[in-house]
Length: 125
Image (cartoon, rainbow, N blue to C red):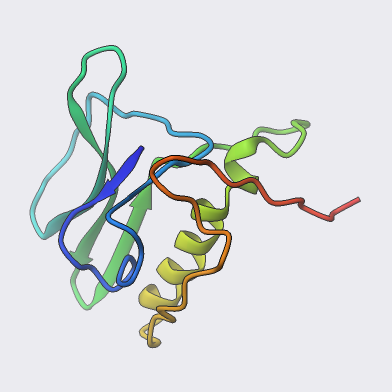
């Protein structure tokens, strides 16, 4: 389960928490926290601790968005993480925010809830 923190433009209008198809927990983050804002977290099932899932960093005049949603490896079928409705909508919003455009706060009807994961058909065949 991913839980948003605050009201960042990337998440504005989304539910407070939702289920994602593929959550990768980074337990041992390194690096500076200068200008860093954690915008969501997930609970690690092993340690029962909360760890950042998404964060932004101000870098000079630029902006950085980072997410630990799942990966797509070479020669791998489209995994659930890439088909996850929450991942897809979050990425579109993050790109809008990074580009300096207004973030579309529309929530797709199939956006997941705290009770269910939503996988979309990729249609890339």
